[in-house]
Image 1 (cartoon, rainbow, N blue to C red):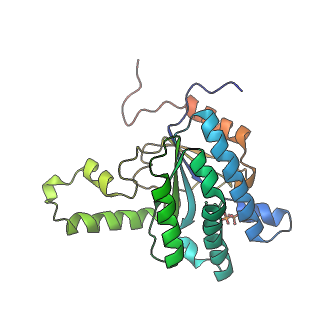
Image 2: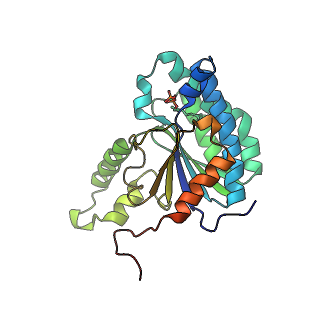
Image 3: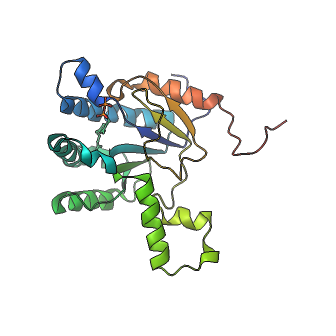
Length: 235
Ligand code: FPP
């Protein structure tokens, strides 16, 4: 494979379409989420091959609590299963796991598993896998503002760098490319602050089918974009 010339350093993905993928096959929605995990494995491998260094995935939003209880339980089970079954391989492959969002709302046992996985992989440096679970962009800003006030930061000291630092993603560079599978053209409360200047790519392909070739199309689209960050084009 010829590697694309320009590759996003930080790729963020809204993994949408698992339910429709399952429905199209006459399967329960949970089968779609399981197929989504399978695909995550493939995408992680492809990130290594393309040289992407940070992958942020939207696995569970603060709004997803409103889904039927059985589906919510299924998604929580998937998080636990991923940690139980995949952690060793992720660690062996140098993946650093991070979490963005609130751990409150998860069982004590699941919270501990997430924290242990983060601790185990903290010095890995091949790829950062940033899992947005119980994540909401607005909630992230609320939490940041609360902590800024609680820390007694004087108003004049508040600038973009400081706000960056107080976000869940503090210390990580912003995403360069946000991909949404499943055809919608919405941010859905994902990385509201961080994605301000990201390129945005939406594909009708459902997440379980978003394979390496589909990823290449997204990266090539990114390569054709001229990122101006609000400036005028270079002569
Ligand atoms: C959106 O599809 C997908 C989700 C809400 C869950 C995504 C989760 C995974 C792919 C599993 C990976 C999870 C972890 C914890 C690593 P949808 O159900 O909204 O699909 P639809 O729009 O077709 O109904």
